[in-house]
Image (cartoon, rainbow over all chains, first blue to last red):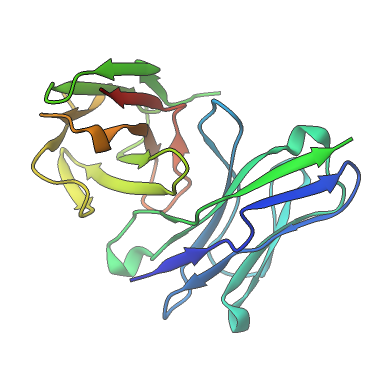
Length: 116
Length: 113
């Protein structure tokens, strides 16, 4: 079965600093990859997704992620963090159309705190 | 901007009682999903629904759970006899096409006493 690992449970960065959140997946083929953000009391909002093509994808709110097949990774980055970025971030995978499966498998999340 | 809505935002129930969680997906979406998140744990897939039938379900989605699209707008999750371990945040999601972005609702927090 596929799995998603987010090794960092909690990260604290200073406002204006750069950010990288790690995500690794375990699956034989290239899955569809997503990053979602969850603010307190809110639902999950999609930041970006990777299906195929250019391995560096741009998302909303200034986020980007890079797919590295050799490392089975899909790390999320932002060059300069804003205080409003404090939230929980989830990496998720879907196996793809050819499997007939549409369910998202989520990582355990990384809670981001931003210091002033 | 269209959004997925869920009601109620918080439901408290006694163990053994039936609960129905309601969702209104985005109007032109065809694929519907339920996920849950037990406090402090991962978001877990429960079930997906398309063309008025379940297209995929997880091991969590046992006989105590059922889903229904009773009319053209609502999508419901019923838990027949709630257990303490059903306490969680339940998220509804919808997508226009399979594997397109799934839009999530704000969730219903279910507390089973």
